[in-house]
Length: 114
Image 1 (tube, rainbow, N blue to C red):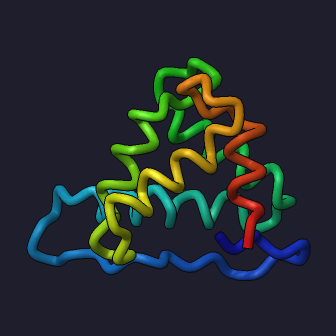
Image 2: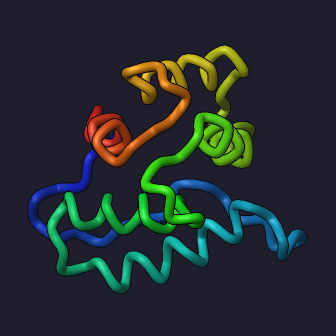
């Protein structure tokens, strides 16, 4: 994963958005991403990731379940050409303590990886 630079630069949305399917997850992510990019353009890297995590943690539990992360990854799996094994490997890599939950620290460390 690419990390955000220390100096503010424009964020870009990396997945194609289908014009035919207005309810697609990619379209939803794009809308959220666009709003987020505008709000966070002058924020530091950690603040950006905290806000992304807050949006993904829509029940405000303070963590994402591995099933939550799997659902997010599956929604973009074909666009980023990720195999099922790669998806499982990503989940295994994110959940460092293997408790079935991804807290902000795990999310942030994963997002900073190149």
